[in-house]
Amino acid sequence: MSYFCERYPIIEKSSLSADIYSYTLLCPNVAAEAQTGQFVQIKAEGFTLRRPISICEIDKQKGTIRLVFEVRGKGTDKISRLNVGELMDIIAPLGHGFTVPDTLDGKAIIVGGGIGTPPMLDIAKKYKDKCTAVLGFRSFDRIILDKDYTKAGAMTIICTDDGSYGIKGTIASPLDEELKAGGVSMIYACGPTPMLKAVVLTAERYGVKCEVSLEQRMGCGVGACVVCACTVRRGGSKEQVLRVCKDGPVFDGSEVVF
Image (cartoon, rainbow, N blue to C red):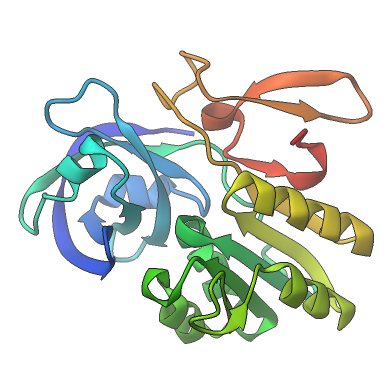
């Protein structure tokens, strides 16, 4: 798949929560090629390494992509200071995304943890009312995109660690309840590694296919530096080391060695 290294105009910017920002870029060539679950590498002025950010939404007709990220250091802080009308320097689209069938057979469950919530919004828009989104956050003030998921047609369940909103605790209980109800053909998940491991184990217990998007530190984003290594086991073979940026970031959950 083709990717591009260019500077694109920012046409929308908003703050979703403390230190979490949403940007929409006008980039028709990227939008035409991009798939749900892929990511971009953003250049922060004054920094050598780019920052990997998942693509939240793709609008092929308008030629736009939406990026949602959290400020976690000086690089992402620098990027967050860009405003509408300025240019964002990105390499995109990168990696392999989620498998979203043309014909929807059964329901889908989306499991998002914190800033792992954005990459799957386009999946909800495709499944609509055949989708349940189980989203976990630390507290009420960290909740993002819940209204976007609801607008897409998904039944949206919010969990908070401190019980300040929705269900108190992790995504484990509501996920189990949704799977018990039956009719689920696919689970998509992105978030912290312990959460992904728990989702995969639950999916295996119910015999439901699961895809996970892994979070890893990255250098180049195109598979050259091998910084973002992960271990998988395919087809009963021995463990092998793959690159999250090029071979992922999305993997069959049953293959990942957590």
